[in-house]
Length: 461
Image 1: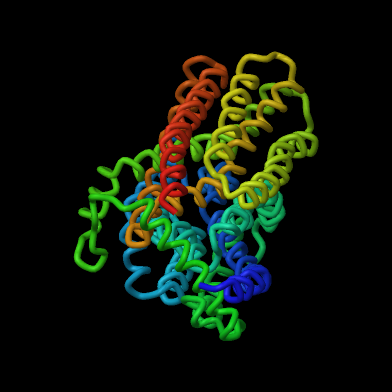
Image 2: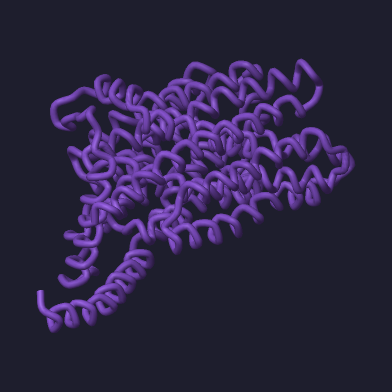
């Protein structure tokens, strides 16, 4: 290659990078915020049963155990159907599959309003769990087709914003809906499921109409934009496939969900990612379920408004940290330490909340823990995606998501049990801190193992 050709390529490179940047910005405007809305309703339909638990239990005659079992049943089916759902997504395409499951969970969630006893509630929650199982792993897989690695952490962050946002405002919105008690013959909790479930049917139809399966199908991208985006992602996938080549291979078209699950469980990298995500989800679940009660125990004399504001503070801190961390992670193209250090802060945060007696310091500890859980999710999923070869992404992402979300079942029962045994949340928060430390240590093993590989690749080039 002569010097003139080199000069032309050097001139073209900034222009190509600018074109890619402009294309990604367009994808963010046209696609990502719509996916955020979908996830908000998904997460709301997942957790709104907790907001109406008192009224629902009273009307259906549920004990605390039977109400807790309804939540457990949801997560059991959610976990079991994650991998099969992602395999169906690969077969039928994102538009058809995601649109269908959104409509199904919207109808099923709305039908919760017509539950008459614990058995009917269990059946409905099982259906909602089956339908929702494929949404988050499917969307995480979908995002890898639209955002290069240099933008993926920020894209994941915007998508994951649904969780702290819904946790902050979901209770407020649901509280207003509960005031519709006896309006047109329905109780307040029935209106909650109707008004928060039925919009999903409309959103599912909108997915059918508007969501492109791949960048090639996006009518709002011109041919040059499609080519630049697809080429950038294909180049990254080829590099990742070389770095992540594994002895264990799997043909997505010929294997059953059982074999796919076995492969994921026996794959060291996938299993370690799953354990890290288990640790992250443990903290997120503890924040969603127990932080309101922890705040009440630390500050027992607060009125409801002040209590709600203080409970919202960790989520506000998390939203700020979420964007700052993910922006810096994408800018530096580094994932390991951007996950390791926040998890170490989460470890410290839970210990502060458990052992310190000053309420302000306890709230600071809860802020650190909440930040460690939610703000690392975007970076973690960017890292997990880069750790999987193209053929393994659908199975790997689904397995990691399913395994991680099993933490919600464990923590919801374990923290409650420890609280009843000790009359304190301290032991439960120590459990959260131990898992944050475990996740950080596993991320450290990834970082130490990856460093020699990077030097080897640079030396080879």
